Length: 177
Image 1 (cartoon, rainbow, N blue to C red):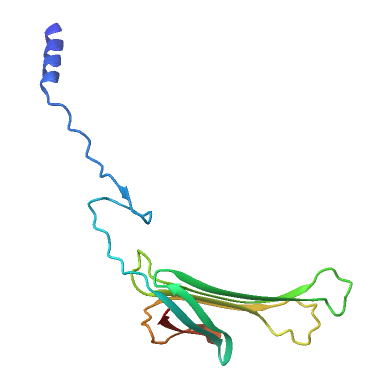
Image 2 (cartoon, rainbow, N blue to C red; image 1 turned 180 degrees about the horizontal axis):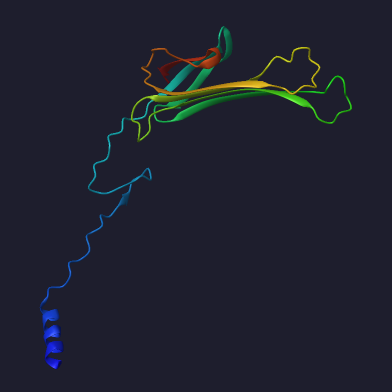
C-alpha cells in the first residue's frame, strides 16, 4: 500500500507544470477617450473643417424656418423653436384648467463620427396643433407631428433636399466658414 502511494507521488512530480494562462493584451486610452489595443491600427480621421449650413425647412409652400448654422465637419448644430399659447374656455371662464396649443420645430445636423466617417445625420421634427375650428376652446386640443431622420452625403456648395411626411422638407447647402 505504501509503495502505491510513493509511486503516485513520484509520478505526480514527474509531470510538467501547467501552462501559464494566455496573455491578455494591454489597452491604452487615446486622447479622445476611445480605448484600442496598442497593436490595432487607428482608423484614419479627416481633419475637421468649419462650415456654415444654409437651411430651409418648409411644409408645402409654407416656410417654417430659414437660417444659417455654424458647425464643424465632425461636430453638430441645432435649432429649436417653440410657441405655446393658452386659452380659457369661452363657455366656462371661471374654469381653472386652460387649453394650450404648442407648436415646435427642431432641427439638428451632425457631422461624421469615429464609427461613421462620412456623411451628415439630419434630424427634423415638427409638432403643430390642428385648427381650433370655431374657437370655443373647451374641446381637447389635437395636434399632429412629423419627424425625419436621415444620414446623407452633402458635397460643399451642392443643395440636398430631404422630403418627409405631411409635406415636410428640409434643404441644406454647406459652405466653408
